[in-house]
Image (tube, rainbow, N blue to C red):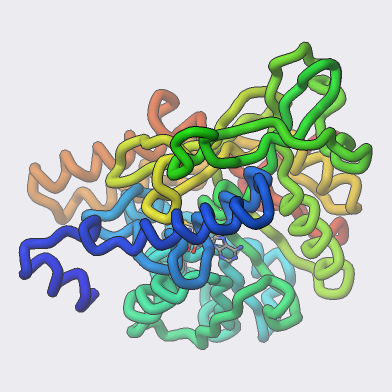
Length: 387
Ligand code: SAH
């Protein structure tokens, strides 16, 4: 972006330009007047405050950014998702008008690769209308630039509920991990909300504390396997998961569709603090400097699957990313791309392939889960989850 180039030329990094202290000040003011705030409120402000939040102010994904995602590692990722989406479209009877909706599109790289790969399915690109669901003005701008040459009708909305109706494929890569989570700690036999407050002596520092006991309704979000955990145990609650699943279920009742989410996390109920902050590809304390680092938490695939089934959706996966990509033909695609490359670029491609698929890299930790209207055929490349 222009601003970044200017900063670079002036010998400054994006870091020196960050408006972060402002967000820390806003949060300190809020805690001073309102008292401690739940972890979810801290996370929501740190990421999405309209002026000083992490996503409002920067593009954390492009070169020199804070973290890297599968579509940024290699074009092959988006291409295979594109083939997957085209396959869904065909399974739905190749409707003449078709909504392709992406939640949290980042730089727009994945959508651009999807649309390029979509050429392989005759009629797909003519049918497609793209809707990007994005809250970050900075990333919306980057998406517009990335997709400037795309030959598809592209619209932006801030919420899935505002996306146009119709048969759809909905996708989200590393979207679920930045939805604000709540945390609860077992203390004195009670589950209590974990909150963020100011250090009693050094009032500039944020620290964790124990807040009120969870209401019964909130306790219902804790997996039965974890509910009787001993004192000191920490669990994470994701109220946004249920909202999203219900939105999908409502939509698919009227207009059938498929939804695919790819993210990192566990497929069995697990306790423990997974909130993590990344700045310039390095881990920093989640409370250390809100607004200057990406804050994410592990996705709870087990609960997503349960919510999906309870909402009447067909659920597929969770499935490891590595196996899915290999089944979808990533090795063949890599071999094809390698043909026109010199040996240095071939080595780079091989590294990208390994990064996306190797179990010790992203292959196992990253997983896919898909939801579909029960009236539709099974999700391509994924076995249905036994009820
Ligand atoms: N999918 C991209 C980007 C992942 S980063 C990739 O894989 O590279 C998370 C993205 O989700 C960003 O674009 C962020 O701005 C967006 N986002 C986070 N929460 C959101 C919300 N509630 N609604 C819409 N977009 C959101």
